[in-house]
Image 1 (cartoon, rainbow, N blue to C red):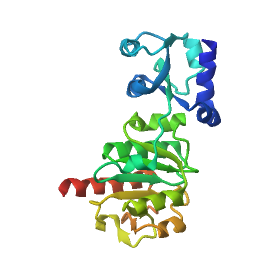
Image 2: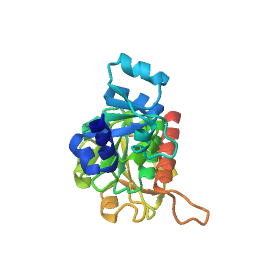
Image 3: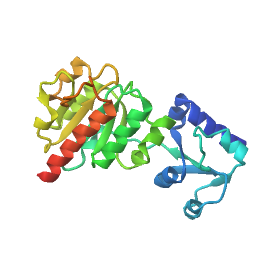
Image 4: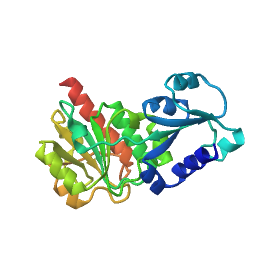
Length: 251
């Protein structure tokens, strides 16, 4: 049991260890339930309904004391169950398999909450996948995982992509590239979203670099008639994605 507890602690605290082991930790009945097909083992503090389902699938479940569990968890109100989960591996081909792909491409997004919210929004709109550039916050950071609310298990997410290579790939597969860019001259409402599409969003502070924007087919900005200078990157992504949903449902 001590070895299991050490493994969990290292996975929670060390990105390099997660990469080496190709595993990560989810916590709480909702996330454990969503991850059930990829679980390595479970640690819990008290019996709960989900345990019966886990045991029926022959998933090893280990009971810990509350003290042991509290030393592992990173949340203020522990829910008494966590799981070590195997990473899923996806390639760029996986995000364009849909008949009319809608992809979100995150470039150097740094805040875990922002990335988690973007993934959750992509899931909500039925996007075909999410692509993360090298330099974007680790997908398996515990704060990212919590912010996705389980959505990271619902759609393909490609990690550590070289931006230029991904742009070349999308162009070769006739995927229209749209940059969310404050310098864009066209409103996001003016764009046609009914074709295979990848929306590029950038870093919280610097936005999308002019170099990458220049490689896109369109640059769009979100109208802001108020006094705010900009929107949070996860909010901007949601605004654009839901305009895409509106047009696609209407069409």
